[in-house]
Image (cartoon, rainbow, N blue to C red; front, side, top):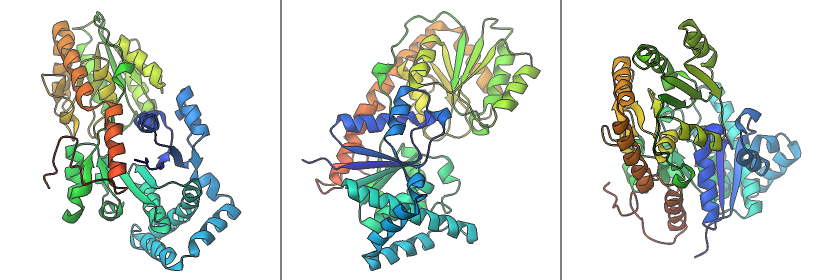
Length: 418
């Protein structure tokens, strides 16, 4: 069977915070797919934190960069205007799916212009299937690219923020027009089903984000009391709860330290709060780190902590569990599909500082419990969140929707129940 030639699109690619997309692309290439990577915007230098990101950045097609060349843009749209019926229909789709107001109309017309240029590039490259990650603006461009060119397209939907504004981003129309949708969890799929017409539920499949377990060598003995957070320093991550928990437990665990990997808009305020509480010797801000550096941080830590208020299924939790690090996080969205409370980690209610601090205290006080959670956590990731296995499943879906077989169901070995 000839594998479909793929293009991958997202708003910015590659980014330090979205390394799971990069892993997915790498695994699809390893399976024999030719994959062209495309990014609406040019990624900022702060996100190119390792050689892998820098190499991917070099060979990624930047849509806006191409659009800024008027000759490129005009030639691309003249190409599609040769089939005026399709062109006008795609323009009508851009108008119909625009967010309310003049600004929304203008943005969708810009996305239409971008789609014409992207479609021209993909047609020249012989791409037969376009896949998008993150169902916002870049997915609108993907939908319009498909409408202009007839190229088959699909998308991965993550959440949670896309479900805060589902009508703004017209996820109903995107689900209807896509060849299929990859949902990262059962929870995510159920949220999309709230807005997608029931006649399209059969093409909503579950494809986990994943990690390479072999990249994270388990460290059998951890003797310190070091906690690690990896994520964007923004309100949704609940870092103030973590700071308070560390402060409360400082006397009980004098050697306790916290290392925060990541950056974001709340970093100055969080650093100021740490200084205000006199915790500078316990809490260290590291900024962005490469995949290799994150793996090294995981090899040195005792507990991974993520007090988020909203998530999809965090890849960083998978990384920690693959490294056999016990995890403490919140019972939200699709997280319980990865972390089982009291079995391979701890789950506490989101926003509950007391519960978070108590659970952290219990984990820090029991090396045996931490070890048991770590072993069980790695087993869970190996079984259901291995990036290579998920890429194979996604490759199978690309093949099925190219006309190579019947609907394969929700997941491998599972039957669709909708």
